[in-house]
Length: 156
Image 1: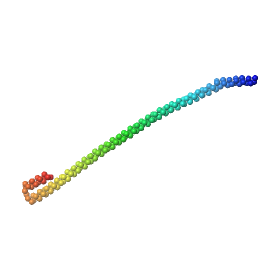
Image 2: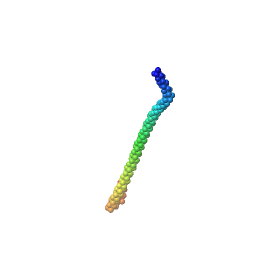
Image 3: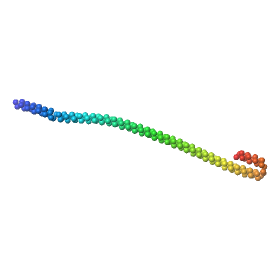
Image 4: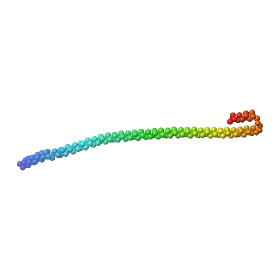
């Protein structure tokens, strides 16, 4: 009997232990496990959300980088076009300046030519007067001399 009584007492103690565990120990463990599962689920959803936000942020960054590259290329093209325009304007001004210098040089050459002609005319006139004086000293014939002076004047 002692085995039977011990076995029954052990069964009663075990039942009390099971009841005590189910009533006082098991609910806090279950609550702690549920809270931990909830925290893990929240962490995973936060990680997924962060991953999605990171992908969206990467897309925005790529879009901004692309826009910045396009803007830089546009500014570079504008700067090159402006530089080309400035070069063309400088060439035009240089061409105009060269034309002015050439025109001034031609005008100066023309003036020098006119001055040289005038000096030559004066010298020829002086020689003509000397020739006339020489002729007049040798003989004085008014009609011949007038004819001669008229031809000289026409040649000058």
